[in-house]
Structures are given as C-alpha cells and as structure tokens.
Length: 380
Image 1 (tube, rainbow, N blue to C red):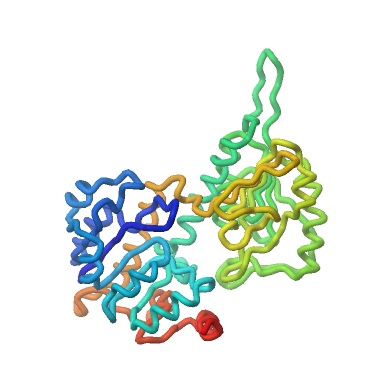
Image 2 (image 1 turned 90 degrees about the vertical axis):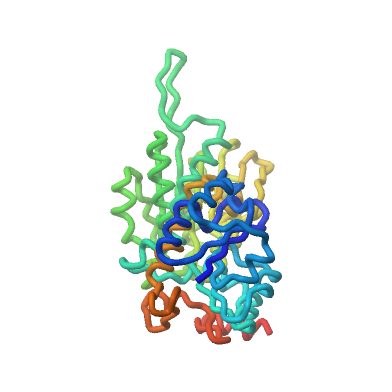
C-alpha cells in the first residue's frame, strides 16, 4: 500500500501530517511512503531526513496519481480530491460540519475518507485523538502568545524599585486546551482563574493551582464525548453578566469554549471588552468557528479603541509546528496501525470496528455520519 503526503497549501500552515520518524514506522509496518519535495520545510524538516527514513521524494502530480492513502492536516483542496483515483483513502482533518460540499464530493468520487475530528474519545483511542493532541499545544501556545503581546510580566517580582504583582489570567473553558493554558500560565507565575459550565472539571482546575469560578446559570452538563453542552440564550446572557465583572479585573483572557460541530458561542461581548483595562490581551482559541469574543477577526489581531488586543489566530498549534507535527503524525500512525491488516495488504476499513467505524466519514459512495449526511443533502 502506497501512502502519500503532499505539501499543505493552506496559508499560514506550518504543520505536516508525517514526520521522518513516522515514515520509518510506516515502512516497518509494510507501507511504501511517498512525500512531495519540500513537504516539511515549514516545520524545519528537510528532504534528506525523509529520504533517510525510507520515503520516496517526488512531484505532486505523480505522487497523487499513485496514492492508495493520502494523509493531510487540512481538508484537501478540490484539485487534490479530483486527482485521487477512485477507491483511494484520505485521512486527516476534514471539518465535516462546515464543509458539506467537500464531503459530498468525496462521496461522489467514491473516496473513503477518515475524519480525525470523529475519532471516538475513548480510553483505547486516546493515542489517535488528534483533536486533543492539537488542542493541548494550542492551550500552551495561547499563553505564550498572550505573554508576548502583554505589556506586563507574568510572575510577581520583588525588586529594590518596588514589587510587581503577578498578572491575572482568566481561562474560559477547561477542556484539553483550557487545562493546558492554566498549567502554562501557572508555570509562568500568573494568578489564574478559570471558568467552565461543567462543574465536573472543578477538581481538575484546582489541581493545577487555579481558582475555579462558579457562575450559576442553571442546569448544565457535558455530552457523552466529554464536550460541554450548548447553553440556551437565557443561560448565555446570565453567564455574560456575571463574567463581565471578572473580565474587568483580568489582564489576560483566553477563551477555549467550542461546541462540537457547531458555531462557537459568543461569551465575551463588545461591552465586556470595553470594560477591560487598556493593555489587556484576549486570545480567542475558537476564532476558526466564529469566536467566543465579539470583535474577533479570524486569522488576525484587533486592537480596540480602548486598548484591548484581541488575538484571533486560527492555527495556534502551528506556533510550535515541529512538536505539533510529531504529535499529529503519531495520531495518524496509531490509527493506520490499528486498521492495518496483513491479509488485506494494508489498511482495512472495517465499519464494525469501534474506532474505524466511528471516524470513517465516506465509503462506497456514501456519507456515513447521519449528521453530516443531512448537511450534505441540504447543501445540494
């Protein structure tokens, strides 16, 4: 089976789906690996490393034409989808709830596609969970980016010239990204507060040394997959009113609240931003799905009239591209290893398998996920 990796063409993308280390593991598994020349340049991985690990270097068109499996970070562009032979497999992020046209085309071309967003959040599949691995690095990078943009030092400092108080950081959302943001901010010496609609995460927040903020918005909870349930309009308004006071005394706010498969909820309004001190920094990790902050511009930074900087970078894991690439490549490898069959001579897409069946989005000309299928039909 021939596994192919092409250069990512998404503007600003620095990650790659396969590193030289994972190339070696794939070849030992029995795969032939082809990579486009210059594939790892943005992550400072050169072609010689790939060749040394056993990869065949080639041009984009020739590699695509001979691919049995295409590994990618971002959803493949239209020309790549059209260039794959029928029956080929793609594996990577597909953003299926927001790209129904792409999903429909994958099915129409009889391509089997594995959506890494749909890997089940089970104990066994943790090593394949790319959403979590990338979210963890996003949480770390968000704090580093905020520190760079802030005019204040993070830790308390006692000097002959006076004492500098620790910066106050508020993290909204205590999922994978939020918990890593809390841990990173604490290591840098900040005073950290955190809020989440799920009371079940209170102990995790406190174990990292942060104060858990409790806001009574009525009944809340989480889905079977561990995601926060979407709040009603009334609950969101109640949450915002109590959150405004907390934001006003925070120097840095990091928002991570997302609802799986839906637009991100607006948690911080323009009035709340206006109530923050000049020089404050907000990093909105939900920018790519609409943003948690009113005024966020996806892929850009905004300085408000009141001197608050809103950072809307959409590829925060790309700030640490080498490590992000290695973790993502490992996620893909473990998934392929799980699905590998010696009898089939490569990847076997067993729809009855609890992992493969869950993340196999298109196969045999059909969209398998009912939620996404409804979106595809509605897009026609």
